[in-house]
Amino acid sequence: MLVFLLPDETRLNELEDAIRQYLAWKSINEERLPLNLDQFQIGQAESKLKSADETVDSRIVETYVWLMAPYQTDPTDQATYGIEEYRLQGNDALPVLCSRRLVATEGLFIVYGATRLRMDLDKLRLFDQAQHVALKQLWEYFTRYVYMPRLRDERVLMAAIQEGVRQTTWQELFAYAAAQDPVKERYSGLMAGEAGSVLIDSHSLLLRPDVALQQIEAERTSADPGPTVAHRTDGNGGHSDMGGGSVIQPEPQVKVGKRFFAAVTLSPMVMGSDAAKIADAIVQHLASLPNASVRLTLEIQADLPEGVTEQIRRIVLENAHTLKFNHAEFEDS
Image (cartoon, rainbow, N blue to C red):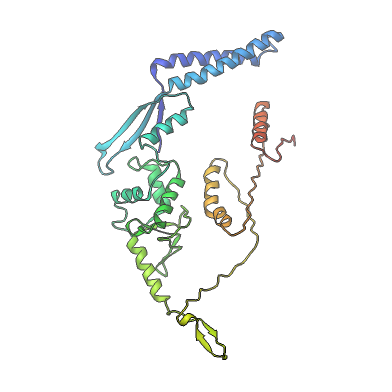
């Protein structure tokens, strides 16, 4: 999934000169007391430092303009491997320029359709010898091999799977199962032709349509005792069929629990990905219930044995205020 951003040689010297200027003025500002600068000189040094910092930012964008993206068109032929070169243009942040260019050339997918997913499964012949594909393994294929489409993150793959399993034409695509029970030789949490949420973990699977259809038909046959006829009392104390026909009485669903609480520890390195999984796997189900009120609270606790610099302290508190945190503060002990 890696792409590479490289500098243009003709602009690299200009960037290095700008960085030297920045470091020089940064050193002067940090040593203002030993240098015995007066107030005018301090103001001049701060202004020069700010200007040098802005120059470095602009020079970085002007210098790092070559985007290199590896590709391979045929997974069985190393000769089809290559590196696509793109020259970036614009004044936005470099990650924005890179992603925008890749999306425009299908070097990066932020939307990945179910039909495209099935085409890639066929290209890799993953369903030829197996009834299912483990989703965790499939995601690893996407992250590891150059011949796989480059997806923004696993949520793009999850959205493609959700799109496929809810379509009426799912038999041309695939089905989804939460897990496999090898003892009973069946799949649990099977979804085919219906809307629902999917999860990429060590148990979830992508199924061949014919395998899913076989289980659906077997369960339908074993669980079909025939229609139940609902009756009503007539005026003479007897019974008569409602409307002269049979009515299927739905089995009532048992409802348990009127409040839900949960807490989980997230890794700060992958917090965005974990939060998205929680939203898909838990929050959306709760929020879909009638008259449900779902509230989420994010609590941050950071132990900082070495303390923080004044700059980091100011940035964190200002950002917390901007993001409308209810409470945010640093403690000395």
